[in-house]
Image (tube, rainbow, N blue to C red):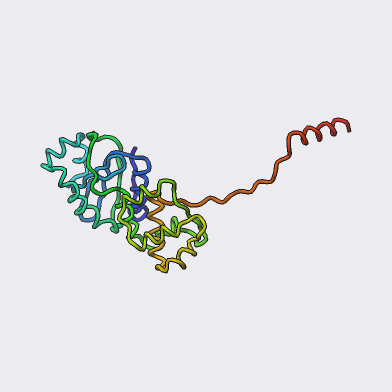
Length: 230
């Protein structure tokens, strides 16, 4: 499977949401204007980032452990590569990406220094208002916490303002209500809701459909009997 696109259309928050929700493993390659970076993804988590001079070179190395030996990298360097080649680029939209699934072999235990939920929230903080409105399209939308929201939020580094917004997501408050009660600016609110949606901590509340009582089988049988006698 290959996932491709333009960062102007798909932000890192969107890309990582897809990879994380399906627990995908492979390599995400982003061709920026100034460099090309390969992001190694295991079970939806970015574990390593490294610049490459030619895209085809990424596909030469099919064993993750042998790649580390070749690059002379140890596990302690993983976090530094992400700090250097990913975090500062989350708001950069001048690039194209492609994700190729499954061609590289990972060992069972690969350390994760930056949980994907943390990266997604950081990417959401870089979005423009127009970008956030792709998911927050109406001030009258109502969101609720997902059943496992707490475990997902624990893997992030949300701020006090973001915690307040999360508290106000209760299944009854509309986006407009949260904006008024939290006293935060609209962009901060929309970015936070976008991020929380992307990590699966909250979800859109479905409207309850009121169904009219259906005709009982006994009554239906009586009506059919009456029709037969006509």
